[in-house]
Structures are given as C-alpha cells and as structure tokens.
Amino acid sequence: MIPDDPTGFHADIDEAEYHAHKGSLSVTGAKALLKAPALFKHQQENPVFKDVFDHGSAAHKLVLGVGAPIEVIDADDWRTKAAKEARDEARAKGAIPLLTNDYTRVIQMADALSEHQRAMELLSAGTPEVSAFAADEATGVMRRCRFDWFGSPELVDYKSAVSAQEAAFAAAAARFGYHQQDAWYTDVAHDLGHAFDGFSFIVQEKEAPYLVEVYRLDNDSRRRGRELNELALQRFRDCVAANSWPGYGRPDETRTLRLPKWAFFDDQAVIA
Image (cartoon, rainbow, N blue to C red; front, side, top):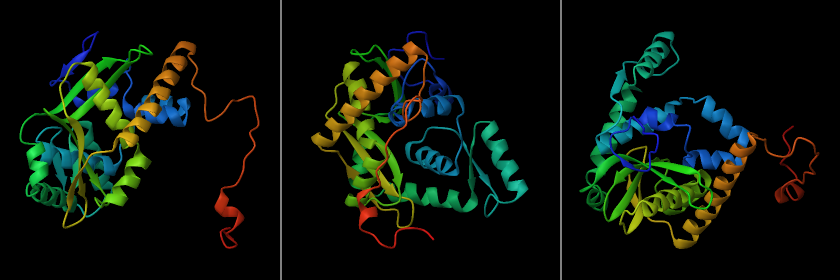
C-alpha cells in the first residue's frame, strides 16, 4: 500500500500498484509528456499489454528473482483462440504469460548472464525492485522510479536488447530515453540521501548466444537527460495546474511543415 506521503524507498510495493499511482510522475510518463501531454494522459488512463513487455518482465523475473510468476503457455504462437484466452487469463491473475519457446529463451538468457563477471559483481549485493518517491524541488512534482537493483555503491538497470554492441545500444539509449532514466533515477536516489557511485546498465541480447555488456552513460549524455526531465516536470506541473493536456501543437494554429533534408536529394524515396 502506497502511503499518502510516499517519500522514501519502498521494497514492498506491488508492481501493479506502483505503475497505477496517479499522484506521481515516472520517467516513462516524462518521456510521453515531451511528445504530447495528451499522449501521456491517454497512456495513463489506458494502460496496454504487449508481448514484448511480457518477455522483458520474464527476463527480469529469472535474472533478479522477483516479480510476477511466469505461466508457460503450451503453444507455438498467439494466433489461436485457445492461446489468446490462456494469455489473457494469465494476465488477469497477475502472471506473466510466455510461450514455451520464449520461456526456454529467457532461461538460457539467465544462464548466460550468470557467466558474465561484471554483471554478477553488480548483482552480488543489493535489493531488487525497490520503489522510490521524491518531490522535485523546483516544481514540487512527486517523482517516482523503480530500481531493478538497488545496490550500493552502484545502481543497476537490466535491459534486454536487440543488440548489446556499443554503437547499437548507444542508438537505442537515445531512442528510448535511457539517458533520461539515468538522470531521473540518480536524482531521486540523491535527493533521498542514498550514497552511490554510479548508474550502470546491464544489457543482454535476446537472441543466442545472449551476449552481455555493462555500460555507463557519459556526463554529456546524462546532462542532456536531466535537461529533458526538467522540461517534462515543468510541463506536468503546468498541465495539472491548468487541467489541460494539449497535443503536439496548439489547436488554434496551422503549422508550417518542411520535409527532412534527405527528401531534397533522394530521387527514389517516394513510395509509388
């Protein structure tokens, strides 16, 4: 149960309750706000499940040892009515539905991760799935985050990825806002007085041989993430105050659009 004043660290908050908390802003919400406040509002009121989320949650369960139970569905895919019904029933009772082949895959991922020296060092001491709440001093907005691994002196987040290769993960980090997550989580931990030396991503590929790498973002990347977070916090504060959640632009204007640069040079780019 989340208290009226949730400020602090919590190791006993249910994941579903954490995600449903309306009185605070997560970094996922912050990223949606930067796209459009209306998009954030819709996602908040209409949460969705995706199979890729189930796969990631199952990997977290086997790697970190906590989370919803996994229910293996004996099917090759989700196309049959029986498979879909079994998936929906599993989700309804709080379980993670996985196809047989996907379950085998996440077990192999956990085995491969256990052989990575640096990853195991990071996961050797700490507490998994710790929720944290801290008000932002500048805006008064209550921030929340949920650490995959709340350690000391290192904070850790586990990511399953298409590629753990350096350039590929750098591109994914930019695309999915991992620099915002880094800054958000470290700022919350700092504001709550937790001593730590850094924030590391354990990155593991989702295909055999399930390669693993450990990365820290550089200071420039983290600084950019913090700038975006500050903008999102301001936007959230203003939207709540006005009870207004606009879209991408103002509803009373027509905006001028310019094609991207490549469109002026590529003679074969138009789809016939």
